[in-house]
Length: 197
Image 1 (cartoon, helix red, strand yellow):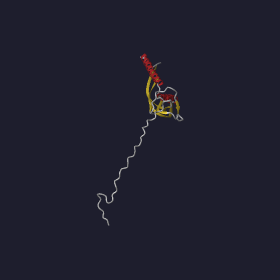
Image 2 (tube, one colour):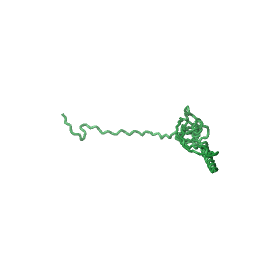
Image 3 (cartoon, one colour):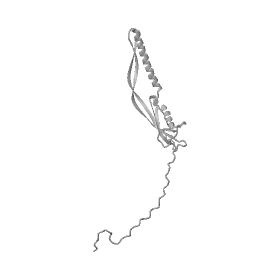
Image 4 (tube, helix red, strand yellow):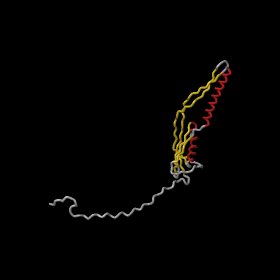
């Protein structure tokens, strides 16, 4: 009996430690940084692999062409500017841009439920200690930060082709004036006769 209790408490302790280790490994190995880049401009460029200039407080160069919109986001420690800005630059280059224009950032707070595993120990007989495991749900408030802006390019070849102008239309000669019927003296045809005094 005594050895049975001891082995079950060791099993429970090992199980709790394993679950805790899995949760810790899962939490530390994942990044919440994500985002998207959507082409919206008239120019379609291939992916760019050079340096990308970032404009946040001043307007981009006048010769820059708009390529599309970009958004990146992250939660907890991944929601810091130091984590999000490199991802924004990567997304801009992904659609051919060499200029990233940061238009703004925003934050939102969400309640996220997660399971908490807790191991506790108690005396279960003379000179024996047993272990138990409790699992309960905790709600955490998580902040998600988004950074958004535009992808642009001022590289040679990024200017859109000028629109094709229609051929000039030369006006035709005006038609000759229509001939008027001669003026008639007297009553109009079909009009009732008028009495003269």
